[in-house]
Image (cartoon, rainbow, N blue to C red; front, side, top):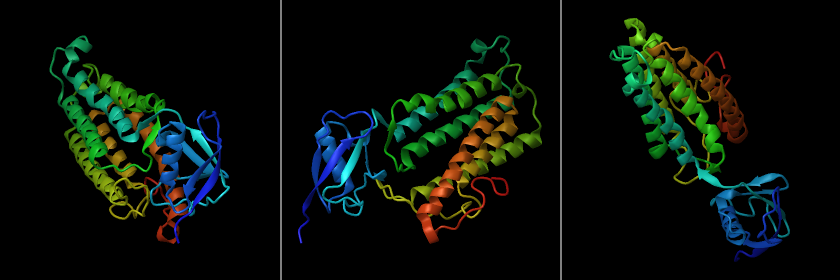
Length: 304
């Protein structure tokens, strides 16, 4: 039997949407993505700006979910919210990581112009710090462009400034200024044992982190929003081994440059990742059901 169109009642949620009609028609077997596209044409706003809910429950923008399976029927009332100007998550990540990626080489090569008394060449530890941190963010940029698949396509454009502070200021300006100074602890001689141990930990952390990202990538089809249960290296230990290995890599960098500024960034980033990991564990338990093996620790085995 052919699919029949149904009529949905609409209302603005929050700020009024001038062109939002009082009702709209959609085929019951059409996808919720079709519903977003229809309202986008009717309101003149991009589908990425719109959020649709029904009785307080979100209606996802998904080509694989039908209108009927989303719980919508003829006469259902949906609320439509304008989220404001949006920016692609991929673009956000590229901009965030670009800061420290540019800042560290600039501070390293322009030391004589930034610091007084910096006529002598940079120390071995300063050179290693620049190399490891720059490679870290090169890896981040490449993963953003070629590895990551995002469940949410966009975010509010205004958030780009808030998100960039963490990377441009903390991992960029703060670490760079106090690492490449001629009076910094990094300018001195380091312990070879500590330096080599830091390099090894850094390399293991970065490679293991990349492996985790590849595992997560393969759980989602291109352009899809589905979530699967990840398995592989680290996933038997904690909920988010990518955060664990990220932390390992930064501990390695700290062992190399020994700067308090790196320790500050590591603590701030660690606290944030721990909070994300807890939320992800809760989501896995909710969505994974019996397929998901509950984890006692979200990020660091035996600790958190």
